[in-house]
Length: 140
Image 1 (cartoon, rainbow, N blue to C red):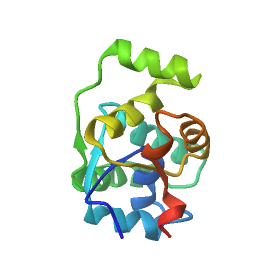
Image 2 (image 1 turned 45 degrees about the horizontal axis):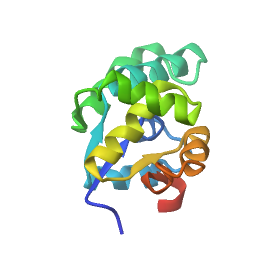
Image 3 (image 1 turned 180 degrees about the horizontal axis):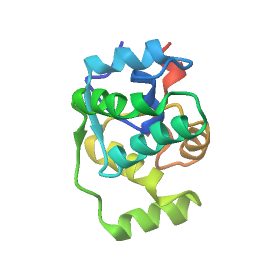
Image 4 (image 1 turned 30 degrees about the vertical axis):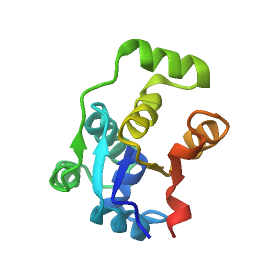
């Protein structure tokens, strides 16, 4: 059963528009209320650009794919406080931008659904965030 609301990261969002492992599972999440921190659009744009640069998708499709992700209606929230982000990054010894996803999941009392194995591993190893992360593959 899907949760009513989830925080999603770029690793999930890109699966809505590119055929990847678990794309079908990612599509199911579109039934939930979708939330993300403020850097979400930039991270999605970066993943799309990287796929163009690596010749996985043609350049002339990139903007249309970005528009499709945007049309899904992910609610983008204001950033958490800078001290909170730094504290989480230091505690987890993990990049601050990923910590914003975890902090938003905590604030919304919702799971962070991710396909980012490194983020999942770090969060699961943390007492504070272990219950906040839900691997996309677990929804399959």
